[in-house]
Image 1 (cartoon, rainbow, N blue to C red):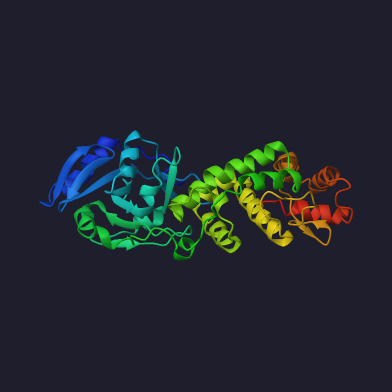
Image 2 (image 1 turned 120 degrees about the vertical axis):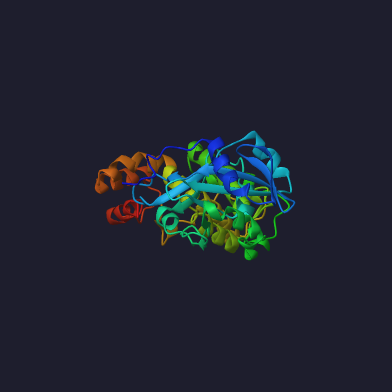
Length: 352
């Protein structure tokens, strides 16, 4: 059983008290104001610090995954606009250990969602020894620093040695944005070429303009206004790959039943479609979609209504029934499709 699932939460004031118990021993430390977050200085440099309890991430298949979450706070708006460094620390009360994530990234993610998760592993937290700073690479690419609470003064002594000040990934920062947005063309494409339902179109568009754009902005491109200003297919493929490696987006995509990754796929396919057909802005033609066709056969289901319709059959392993429903749904659109093709199409929808 994960001991972090039922752990008693330490109150914000107590978390501040535990930190000050160590920091007050240093003449370089000055407490200024606030509780969680609080403002302090160390060696005459100001820092905003926010400490949150580490708890279980509640993944049924990853029992050792832990997390600390950033909520929405009014104070974070001021912090986000300031030039002061923001430090987000997760506190493990079982091992008396702090976890610090890249503060260049943490600051950019303030108030972007109700609960923005930063992940860790309980076994990394438990292996930390007195006086050492341990850095571990997580599967999502994060490299948090682990250290005992007693090392908090040493942490601030070396604060600028842990994380690079560079924000994004170099190859992403070279992306040249369009001067105009492709929103209207993408919506037209979904309706007239992909022939998706109004609900699916609304969900795809909302995912791209909202969570996906925010994710790209927070992790890779600080100055991005919207994904619809990017038409670099190779760059978008790389961003897609990196974005959905993040635990936050893995979790989001699972909850959304792959809607977010499908929306991103649809935008890339839209750009490919334009490129293959050499279609200029505002002149999309009513032709048959090609992005999920191979020799006249459909290779992927992206319609959310259809995916939701067959989901109960997939869960109960009624593959044949699901294949028949899909075949009827696309009746007369893909005449080369046989029953075995519909079955393969449905099997590809099963969770990997």
